Image (tube, rainbow, N blue to C red; front, side):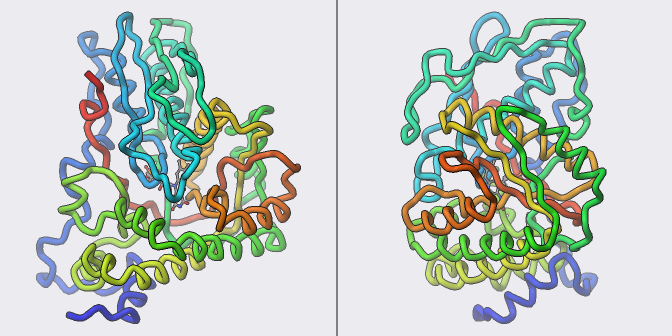
Length: 390
Ligand SMILES: Cc1cc2nc3c(=O)[nH]c(=O)nc-3n(C[C@H](O)[C@H](O)[C@H](O)COP(=O)(O)O)c2cc1C
């Protein structure tokens, strides 16, 4: 079958719906077995199991850019481990200052902390124990040293209950508004005087933001190298998911069952997208426009400075926001193209900062939409053992 862009758009537009013809797609499955095992959790907690391993089983479920899972762990004595950025899992084209990668370190640490508490351990987290590094490099120094100390008095956190359910929902949302009580609860979950959270839900605020989102995607995909980077982490079918156990694909936009099978079999493939990156890019812009305009609310987290430590701590705050949205049955999805730091995005980023009334010199670290939608399939994860550095 030849690639037919119209047909592909129709398939995307249908999302998870459509008519299923029994027997026509017998081997159609949304879940490649091994790649999703992590979402079942580490199983029963027994005295023989290393609490670090259990904490790491939850930590790897954190939000992270393009699901590159940019984490390396070195086990130390005394129930400790060091967390490093994995230099082989960076996004130099879309995240040239590796800021998003450091946000993903913070989300990992937040999950580890929540899990440690649940196990009755205090996670003592020392950030950059060997010193930090500059804003445009990654050095082979730990981002954090985490030591687990048994502490029967440690408080459990109710957000722990949502670690296995949390997701970034890339669907088109149903458009229904958020209730004031829901917005207040989200505000409380992410409450930090260091990293202020803004939430907006009136159409006059939301509409210009939604427009900026697809314009930013248009800028991102205008560059062949940036497109190539995204394609590198896009997983076109179950075989790729099973092989790599990272990245993301059409399942995260809500496509499932026969529609997903049709899209993957006839309209989407690595070969076609590489041969004709323009069509992959233009579909990305169209989908972004639909995603962005379907969201009744947006939120962002700001920092006054923009050090590596700020980025990591914002990652922790965002992970809590994501978990709180899950706890309230809300869909949440980052949309961060407009924050990207290459020159072509500067003008649009400035436009966003003005619309969002961000004080001069402050950095918006995380930007996301909120709404209501059916859950999507989880993204895959590599096993914890793959992250452990000898
Ligand atoms: C710093 C950061 C930036 C992100 N930016 C985007 C984005 O622009 N668009 C998007 O759809 N998802 C974005 N995400 C979500 C990731 O794609 C998602 O976390 C990853 O694929 C893992 O999936 P999960 O969160 O469902 O476990 C971002 C996540 C992080 C931590």
